[in-house]
Image 1 (cartoon, rainbow, N blue to C red):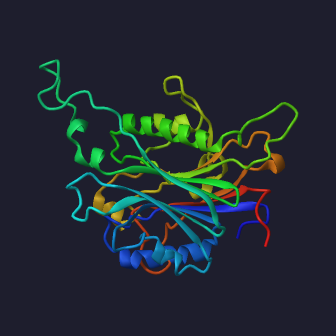
Image 2 (image 1 turned 135 degrees about the vertical axis):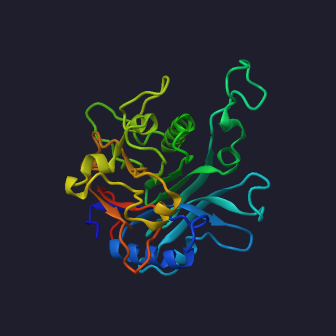
Length: 317
């Protein structure tokens, strides 16, 4: 349970569309959320269509905490899915009402050449130019403002070799966050920033030493752009917890079935705590979540995180 002056955030890529066993796995997510008693939850790979509510709705209706649900999704490219009304994206759950919601599709980088278009006959064509999954499945940023707290859930493009696309996506999501936040992060000499920092959670499909994650952590500039977010695991995890792998074929059967290598690709980022009133934004704790089976099945091919952050403005009652 979070303290009276902190917020607890849970993060998980739920895999509700592509991975098998969703009917059983969703009950495991409910069990974990009841165990964690999180205030805010970010879930990726959530979907809905003309005849189905968002796949996270089933979870919301069964959790002990009376969560509200904010879902944002985008259409797939024509021909990629049999149901054209399907929307694929992410969801934010909160124990408080929402004041503002939005969803944006994150861009992929332009492709310079395709089959037969290379200016150099000896240069192989760019495989990204004809990658239907890259261009056809949406990567989204979902925003929900709840009790004055800005929460963002992101899902970036998936292939390990897609770093250039993810670099463009993190630049765009950082720009969108700045636009939404306005002056909420502005500092002035001799005063404390009265607003809590934003929370950015998601499946970033990028490892900690990648350019895109180092950019978010203020360790690398992309072009003329720079920013700073706290990687909650980096700044607050107890090292006995290990490297924080969120996909590990040794422990997750779905990850083993996909034969993906062991990696940390799921994150909770917290905006800068610098000069925040009441130490808002200080990360108190970061720990694994959804990583063991409480009900006999695993929640996803990912494991997740639970993070506690100081929030003096937390509503009472």
